[in-house]
Length: 139
Ligand code: HEM
Image (cartoon, rainbow, N blue to C red; front, top):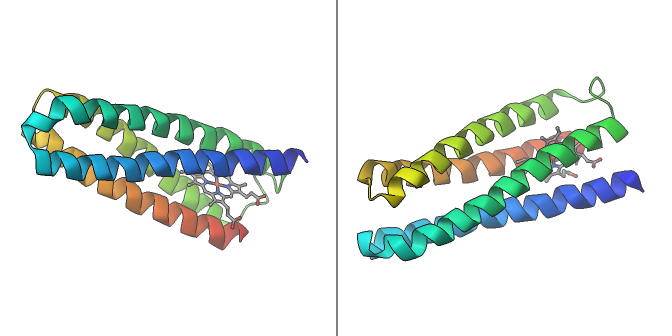
């Protein structure tokens, strides 16, 4: 029962994080079309989605750690799990950089806006790989 509730939380957190990541890809495309005039309207939407994504990632890490504890234990997990953890660490670092770039881009910094677009795409790729490694390990 505890395991099932934790897995439910893990999936809900995944839905939250994925919605934020894909949502921000749409916001990024709208900013690219709308130019600088769209920044005051669209950047707050992006920041709001970003905050949802932070909550999702934090819940994924907490529920994931608890799932290991009630499940196989840290010595019972396989190689794909540790590949997944390396990808989660990379994703966390990339999200920190994207959050900083978003702050700079709100002040109309073109370089930061371009960095934000690249990091957004990288984050989606990392999430796809994280899900793949999760399925290889647990599916
Ligand atoms: C971006 C972060 C993460 C994503 C997108 C993610 C995604 C997933 C997905 C899709 C599954 C289901 C796999 C399957 O049943 O085939 C899963 C399972 C699991 N994840 Fe994560 N995860 C993330 C972070 C973490 C972290 C940080 C940990 C551990 C510290 C973790 C531990 C686990 C465990 C133990 C399971 C297996 C649960 C079970 O079936 O008993 N995850 N994860």
